[in-house]
Length: 158
Image (cartoon, rainbow, N blue to C red):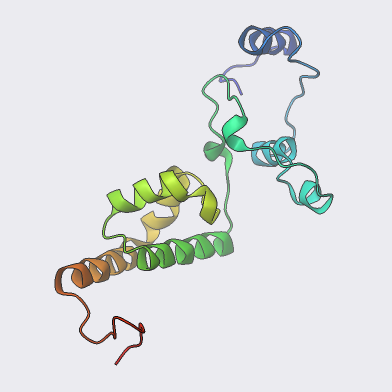
């Protein structure tokens, strides 16, 4: 991805410089969405998953030219609601009391919970700060005062 128009040859040259002489098979202009192209190349697209193609580990992918896939991820309303619910469950399940704890948790365990980067999570949470604050406050209150209405051995609410 480049800020200005570039030729296929200049892209090939940049890739070869970064990854080696035999690193380029084809340079292609992205016609549809960047997110779909990325999912296609990593075999995370619906089609690739259905065909049981090997999924590449994102940690093994070398990104060039300050590429950031999160800039191109678009979520529909249902995806945003699902992510909000997932984050609220994580806050409750892992007793995360503030945004710093949530951020560190997502950096360490976000992939395990199918969460994107904190940048995308923040964009979803931004519209629901009141709800998220209530979850954080509940965890904080339980940390500070404990829960006298829960049997510590069975987990049952009295």
